[in-house]
Amino acid sequence: METIFEKTSATTGRLTVNVTEADYKPEVDKKIKQYTKTAQVKGFRPGMVPKEYIQKLYGKSILVDEVINLVSKSTNDYITENKLRVVGDPKPDNELSANVDWDNSKQFTFAYDLGLASDFTVDLSAIPAITNYDIEPTEDKVNEAIEDIRRRFGKDAEAEEVEKEDLVFGTLKQEASEIEIKDATISTGRVNEDAFHIFKGLEKGSSVKFDIQSIFANVKDLGYATGKSEEEAAAMAGEFEFTVEKITRVAAADIDQEFFDKALGEGKVTNEEEFRAEIKKIVKENYDRESNYLLDFEVEKTLLNNIHIELPDAFLKDWLLIINEGKFTAEDIDKDYDAFARGLRMDLIRNEVAANNEIKLEYNDIVDEVKAEMRNYFGAYSYEGLEDIIDNMARKTLKENKDNAVRKYTDRAFGKKVREFLKANLTVEKKTVQVDEFNKIAEEVYA
Image (tube, rainbow, N blue to C red; front, side, top):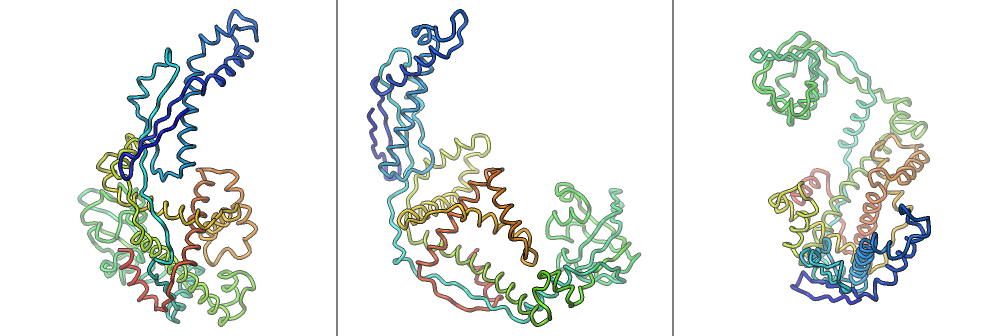
């Protein structure tokens, strides 16, 4: 068997595989012999079917399977052994394949077009310095967090007049269309800032008119308020009248031991000073998480800006169209291609960094990734004492492998491990900022 590779451009190549009779005949003969022993053929006793008869019935399909397997293995082995930076899948020359004479030929030739990323090196010492922002929580931000937690663990109580963050229940109707929704629920914390004045100060029995699409920033919130689907909410238009029937407000929880235990876990703190210290710590952890997201983004951005990788754009667009047949048009692929190419370049860089630095993934790395997602689900104030449960749930998730969970979490864990290596080995300069300044910086970076 002969495998020949030739470059057709800086980012494409052609791989040709020539298969001779000596390559496939031993395995084909072996399988035909096996068939004579196991095939159930009418008119013959088991194990007594003549070889010639099996050859006539199954010989061609056995030959095709064996040759295709040989070609596939040879192609993959050549790519691996020669460390070709293949992107996308090898594209078979269908015209050449269609002309194969399986009935009479003894030698077979197949060819594949390959998309290749250009050669590149990752020299971390040559990458410019990156800034990591350390955000210090102010007392005002700690107070805001505490008030938010108090509301979360507070109790509902009826109110006389509408204020911010109230739930207002009532009837919403439109005379022109005869639409009437008797169980509408408007969360004043979700209405647009410039629309809140419409509801502020309303009392039970009050009515107010407004343009229905001017109240919320998106149709999802309007759907929640009206009990409609997003599609139905989007179709609502014009002036509606809302009549208040009930106003509910969350009365903030008292700052006492019961509140401390509910918020942080039983016995975690025993006084307000300790509680504030814990909340400040949690706020800082949240800030660190946001700062780390920005740092990860900056690391990728800086690497991509300083490591040039040329891709076979036309080849990849054609490949994406083929594998997504019927799902996307060529115009759709053109529209999203830049984001795809960016992700592909970053994958190539990650793989290069991992290979050059022997970064290996352990099973516990994958388990930790599942556990981190579950902690986010339970919330920062709620997973104390649940570690054993979270660990068991994580391992069960991987064992069941629903929705290809193992692949998903493996990819995440690998990405995380490489990111941590990069942050530890790139030049990172620390800068302390207030949260408002950080938000402005992040807005500019993400734009």
